Amino acid sequence: MSAKRRLVPLSEVEQHIEQLRRLGIQIGAVDIRSDGVTFFPPNQEPENALAQWKNKNRDRLAPR
Image (cartoon, rainbow, N blue to C red; front, side, top):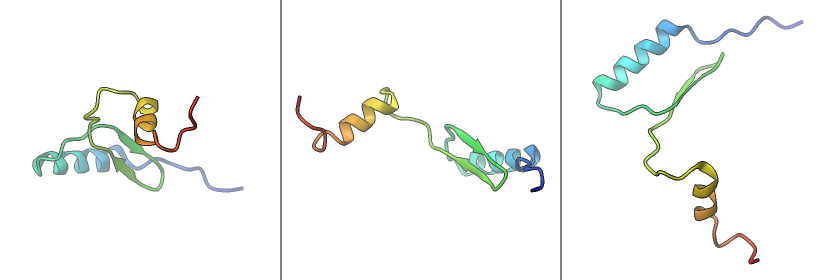
């Protein structure tokens, strides 16, 4: 049986957030896992993820 997986401590996440803010980096979403934390930039486009993917892959989509 494996050991219980725990998330990164909240205090560590808060330290990273404060450091990024001091550096002037904007934070969008935050993904907290047991093996680390990922900070994503804020979404600059008003479209949802599906619309962004369609626009990016327009050439690869089959014609209807």
